[in-house]
Structures are given as structure tokens and as C-alpha cells.
Image (cartoon, rainbow, N blue to C red; front, side, top):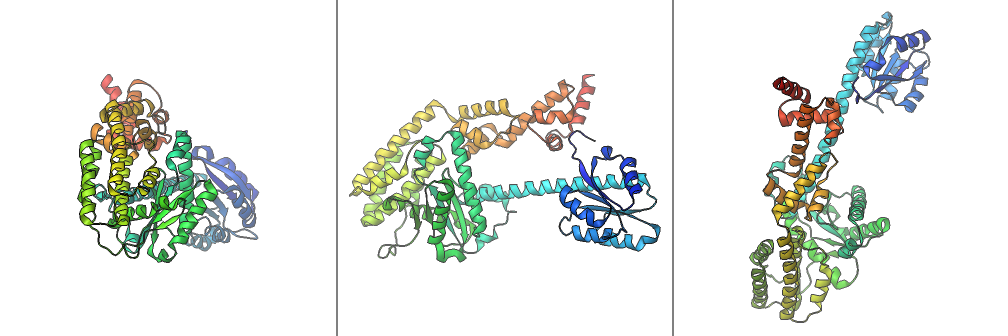
Length: 532
């Protein structure tokens, strides 16, 4: 048996002590990777032992007093469908044996017991259990991948970037073809909280809030829940919950406060349908959420038209928004300042009343702030303070002047940061860190935090400048080190895996073969022949 092979547990059930003794000594249990965890003289005694020992294989006489083998199997299999039953039967009990096979037995053998035949049978049972385990691990991996990919897909659509995820069309998203609405949950005073937390505390708090949201979502029929920005999560609700939006939001904020002691606010969008509408309802939920800064306290805010003003058609300056985003992305300060002047001219030309002008400016600021955050171009910039200050200003010129001053300061800080460390040096630093730590359980969150970038920005930059995705580069480093070890040492193959970051030698072998076209053993043999 290999060093890492799991031992499976076997329960023996027979009313003849001599058969139990012979089974224990005649079968090479250790070689088969099996261990006997109990013995029972009848089916009733076996039932309690099964509860206590949780065996994977049961070898049982088919005819026993009190509760026979078939009755035992019928009792247990509905609760433990993966249990393997092997029955022992006499020559006159063939009909029982055939019935046992029909009811789900793995196999049977006749008395007197041929120990070689039973050993072969147990080896086949071992193979079946191994395959079941591998399938379970694969299904778990696929489910996890599916969940993560769905989150990423929803996040990309919310950002308005559907193209990169066309290859994920196999993911089921039919629930968004029916009516749904979005809730954006955001921790209050997030900037001041993160100033108090260490990096480890920040990860712990965000993980705790996500757990609270996921548990609540399971109980309340949420279609999907995923983190969007730091301190912000998105929940998608079926349209059937439309009537109780404020109550749902109240439950959310109360649950987070109860279990984490953190305050949060919720912005809820109007109802829509279609996955392509995610990017349209996100700004609506955010716009609702920023009513929090007028109210002065945490709460639930619904995207609703205001009577008397909401009916007016106001053309949103989308091209102006895109131009401002581009000026931020390229750190073009002069262009950004002139575009704020264009915004003022647009509002004047529309002749908007103060309330509508404020709403449009706030919507634009939220988008631009998110662009700074997406590129990790601010460290401690409490947006709520800016919005509250703008709300207190009485004229359009004073609001635009305040905007220009605030964004100018942030842009200059970003320019200084970019001058200190450009993208290429960031990627090189990240690569060196990965090369030094590939043998650990590296996460993309850890490396992007080291780089001082948001995860999405880090992924894009790393791929552009290195040619690898993060996972591809980690795997590349691990495979190069594995090849070196195999070529230059006598370390056993199964011992190489943990040295290069893999706890499961079988998984390491699969990855190695995919990368090199050979198993580790074949690779070592080929290179040793070449050396000779």
C-alpha cells in the first residue's frame, strides 16, 4: 500500500465464530489497504456497530438469526448508499444470493470460503471506493469552480464587461432571465475601519461578513451573492420578493450588525430581467445607496422615482462619463479638469433644477470613484465625506470647483504613486515573490495585496506584462522546481509533491503530466538515460 493511500474500514458479520477467525487471519488486510473495525454475530448487532464505526465495506453471512444479511442491507443502504456489501452464502441459498445482488450487493461467494477469491473481490471493492472518492473530489472541485466562475461572471457583467466571459456560457444563468433585483450591501465608514484594521484583521472581517451574507442568502432564496469591491457585496433577489424590498434590506442590516457588530447600509435597485442588465441596475442601486449620506444614518434605500422630478427625461451624458474614466485610467489631469467644465456646461444647457443636477453629479462621482478604486488609485478617500460636502454647497459652480479640487488632489497622488513604481516593476516584484513562495498555499489575494493593487487590476496587469495568468505562473514555478528535483536528487516522487506546493501526490502527478507530457517517474527515467 502507498504511503498516502487511505485505509478503508471493514465490518465482519457472521454467526459462526470460526468463520470470523478465519477471515481475520487469512486475508491480507494490510496489503489491501483495509482494516477490520468490528465484528457482529447477527444483523441487529451489526446495525449499532455500523453507526459507531462507519465502515465502507461489510462482509456478511446471508442467513443469520434475528436480522439476516439482506434485511440488514435494506435497512442500511437507504442511509449509506455507497456502502459495499459482500455476502457469504451456502450452496442451498443461491436464490438469496441472487436477491442480494438485485437489492444492491457488490458480490457474493459460496461456502467454504475461497480466500483468494475473497481477496480479489476486496481488491475490486477497493478500486470502486477509490473511484467514488475521486468522483466526489472532482464534483466538489467542479461545484467550487462553478460557484467561483458564476461569481466572476456576474461581477464582470455588473462592470459592463461581458466579452471576457464568453467561454463560460456553459454556466447556468437562467434564473436571471426572469425578473430579479439587486441589493448592494456596503459597510459604513469602510475607509476609517480599514485604517484601524491590520491586513489580517481586514481579511478576517470581510470573510466573516461574507459568511453571514451567504448563510442569510441560503435561508432567504437569494439567487446569488458575491463580493464586488472591498467592503461591498451584491445580492440578486428573484422578482417575486419585490413587494418586501425594504423589509429584506432591514433583515440584512440587522443580521450583519447582530453577528459582526458592524454597521452597513443597503441600496436596492428596481426590478429588471436578463444578465446583460446587471451593469444597468448596479448604478441604480448605488444611487439609492448614496441617499444614506443625505439621511445621515445607516439604513435601507430603494431606487425609486421622485414624484414631480422622476418623470422628467434627463439624458445622461454617457460619452462624458466614458471620457472621464479614460482620463483617470491614463492619469491625464488636464483632460479630467476640462471634462468637469464640460459637465457643468451640460447641466446648464439642460436647465436642470438643483435636485436633478445633484443626482446627476452624484451618479457621475460614484462611477469615477469606483474607477479610482478599481485601479487601486486611492488609499484612504472617504467618499461619503465628499458627497456630504457637495450636498451642502448651494450652486453649480461651487460644486464643480469642489469636485475639481478633490479629484485633482487624488490624481496628483496617483501620479506620484505611478512614478514611484510602474506596472512592470510591480509585476516583477510579484513574480519574485511567487518564485520564493511557490511551495506555500499562495492566494491571489495575498499577492495582489503585496502589489498594492485590486485583484481585478492585478490580474489584468500581470497577464498583460508576464504573459501568464496568476495560476499559470504559480504552476510554471512549481513544475520547474519539480523537474529540477527529479533530475538532481533521489527524492521519491510522492515526496516531491509537498516540496513544490501540492499536498496530494496524485494531483501533483496529473498537473506534472499535463505540463510536461510525462509522469514524474517517466520524466526522471528519461533524464537519467540521457545523463548516461
